[in-house]
Structures are given as structure tokens and as C-alpha cells.
Image (tube, rainbow, N blue to C red; front, side):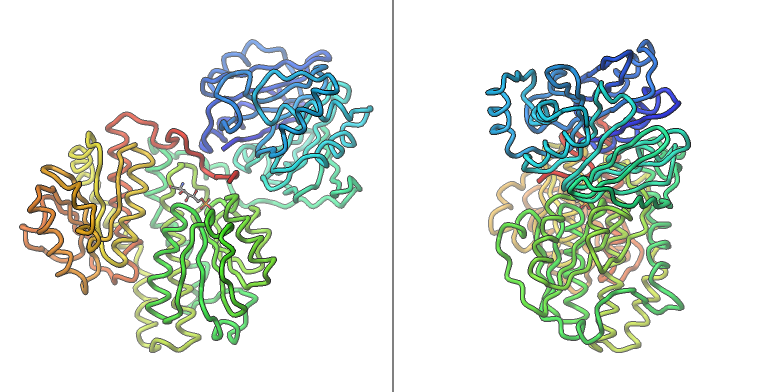
Length: 604
Ligand code: M6R
């Protein structure tokens, strides 16, 4: 979604802003802009083209040492230059970049209109620049505080003022914002990746806090605009993490990083073949769990469905998986001894964050599975299990899913150990299998030529079916999401047994159907279902870990290494991610930045 970067220092502001915006491109955007201060006025340039449009301008632009940049993902108002950020106030004194949504912008706009302000754009953001101007009496921090006190909604704001050209003021509520400390220069950003090239010394702003950033220093203020201490942390991430490292696309690089991701994630919690979690939940509390709820969005929710499968099988504790945008508004039934597990790669997903707030209010125990350290969810959770996927840049989540599944699998085994619902011998063998699963993923990665051939078959399709039963249906759901979000081919995942209750009406001569079959117990049922769709003309790609199945059950086949069905999502998803990738490349689409999508969904 929207991205913010800001700079103040001895360097050329535009250079830093453009590099930062380039790094933020992966979040998804439809227009972008920069503003710097030059000779007592703002030099502003906006475009609906890619960042390269700004680069052309910046080459000729006058030099400046302070500036703000923004990538906009349209919410209020269409995609055009007047709606792009930065927004400048009526007297051209204040410039603002904003991520989030101002919910009461209509009331504020009417109030400002009654005071004589006029509006150039259709955005909610323009009320902020004018509101700050309205309150400005020579102190930008003070005026910002007064303005945001009036605002309802979510925001991360970067603000410059012509009368105070040596500072940038920032504040945030429910939208991430960090400041970065350099030598003789300082930075602001909505995401570490934008400034990682320059510094890994950062401070994360909490809701309603403010910071004033100058060239040689920065000061932090609490929600009353009273000074608070400065806390700067060193972020472990390296710039390399956000480069393609020789791959054509981030998505391909990230799928290929699945093996190292699995090793890193498992080694975080597996010590001498024993699972060690640093949770503030006693064994007694874990033994008394009544029900588990897993709450997440998109791919992370699909990892949660895998969690339901393995936790229920190993512990017999009922698990309810909910989409966060539903959970937060449904007044969920939560009991004292329930446990909620939240899953998020970015740690910034608005609906997941709101669901955590709700669970906190009700005092229910919860654990968060998060990839990005220092993200909002990381900071609001007492019990954290990290996935060690490293930076995931492509919008389509791949290695993060694999890591989320690994962590949930470990948690299920850990719980079964405490509850003694499974024998030690079986648990040991599960741990051993998980420890070596990266080898099977590596084997699946090596069959790439086959995936390209299959991608050629389906690239011109209008619709593709993904079918499976049990855990294989959950894999089908994730595979279907992958294909549709990047290739724009409509796809539908259906529980195979449900097909004849309706969807089979859509199967006709040549309908490409991808069948996932890793659960031996259900295989004969799956084969009967395959016969039914083949009888109606479907072409079947069978993804299976059965050795040499009868050719009558498939037209194409992807043979997976032998894998316990409890862990099959980790292995089976990889070929399907690669098929989705190759289809998209064959169609000539932008695989890392699919249309309308953003990497982290920071608005609801
Ligand atoms: O950052 P999160 O894991 O909370 O994001 C949740 C979803 O937005 C995300 O998994 C999305 O579905 C994927 N980008 C799809 O590939």
C-alpha cells in the first residue's frame, strides 16, 4: 500500500528519496511524488507513471537537502497527479505525505471550507495539510498535535513547513512509521527497506507519538507532545535481503529461498531435537486450553488452516480458523481458557492488528507468529514465535507461507508433547521428518522444467480448478490464491467431495483441474472424484506423493517426494507456486507487483 520516505541531511534529498521509493515499490502503488524545499518554496513533482517518471524529473530538479517522497495506493479519489502526495496546504507553507485513512475527513473539510480553505484534490489527506496550516502559529510540532487531535482514522504522517526548513515532523496512529539515524543525516520511512541502504539504527514510533527530525539529531515526544527518551535499535536486516541477487524476479528468488527459510526457522526453535519456545504461557495453561482460534488474512490464513489440521490431529483440541476482517466484527465467542494464534508475515495487517486489540481487551491468551521484527504485531504481542523467512518483497507470499507452516507444525508437536496426546516415539519421528524436510523441498524445486511445460498449457485459460480433500484442500486454497493473484486467471479451490454439490456444473471439455493428493487415507476417494471429472472432459494435473499411480488418473503429473501428510503443505506448495510464477511470466505480467495488490494491507 502507500509508502513514505523522508530525508534531511548533507546529501542530495532527491537521490535518497528516489532510492527509498524504489525500495517501496514492492508494496504496490499507482502514483508517486516528491517534495523538497528549495529557496523558501516547495519543489513538488507527482506522476501516475512508475518511479522512473520521478527520476527523469529529479535529474533536472534544483538541489535540496530536505524532502519527502510517497507512493500512493488510491483509496479516496482516482489515480491522477492531483490526488498523488505530497499534498501542499493553501498558503503553500505545509507539505504532507500520509499513509492510512482519515475517516472524518468530510467533517474536517467542511469545517476548513467554512474558514475559507479550498481543496484541489479528492483525497482525505489534503485536510491534514490545511488543518496543520490552520493551527500553525510558528511551531510545526504544536500545530501537528492540534491537527491530529481532531482526526479519526489511521495515519502515518511526514510533514515539512517552509517556515521551519530544517526539520521534518512525524506522527502515527495504526499505520507504521520509523525514523532512521545517520551521521549528519536522518531519515523517516514507513518500512525499513526504504532506508536500509543508509542506516540500520532505527526507532519505531508508537501510536500517537511525535518526532522532530533534524540533520544532526532527533527528538521524540509522547502523545501530549511532552519529550520522551530516544530509543534507537539496531535492525539485523541487511540490504542484500532486499535485492534480487541474480534472480529475474523477487518471487522466484523467494521460492528458491524456501529451503534456507525452513532451516533457519526450525533451527530457531529446535535445539538438540527438542522444541524450545520462549512463551509466557505455563504448561498448566497450555494443558487447560479449551479451544484454539487462528486468526489471519490471505496466505497467512491458509497457513492457519494447516495449523488446524495438525493441531487437531495431534492434540484433539478443536481449532477454529477465522479471517481477521470477519473475526474483528463478529463479536467472537472467546472463553477464558481459549488460546488465539495470530499469523502475519508483515506484522502490519490492519485487520489482524484490530483483532489482536480485541483479544487483548477481552484478556484472552494469544500468540503471534510474525516474520518482521519490530513490526506493530511484534511489539503488541507478549508471546511471539518468529518465522525466519527474511525480507519477503514479492507481493505473492511464498517462503513466508512455508515458514508459517513450519512454526505451526512445531507448535502442534510441542503442544502434543505437553498434553501427552501422542507417544514420545511418534513425536520424535515427526521432529526428525520435519528436520529433514528441506531436502524434499529442494527436490521439488529442481523439477522446474516440468512446471514450465504445464504453465504453457494453462496460460491462456479463463479459469482453473484446484481440488483436494482434507489437508490437500488447504494446499489447493493457497495454490489457487497464488495463481489468481499474479496471473489474473480466475481459479477456484473446491473440496473434492463438494464438487458434485454444485461446482461440477462448470467442468467441461478441456477444463484444467489441478488435483492435490498427499493424504494416503483419502486417495481412493480422490481417484473416484478424478474419474468423475475426467468423464466430463477435465484435464487433470495430479500432484501426488504416490509412486507411479495409474495413468488413467491424470493427464499430467508432478510426483512429490514421499512426505508425511501432516507436513505435505511445505513440499506440495512449492511446485504450485512455481507453476503460478511461470504462467505469469509467460503472460508477460509484472509478477512481483500484481495489479491492485499491496504487500502489506495496512488499511482495512
Ligand atoms: O502480512 P500478512 O501475512 O499479515 O498478510 C496477509 C495477506 O495480506 C497476505 O498473506 C496476502 O494474502 C499474500 N500477499 C498473498 O500472496
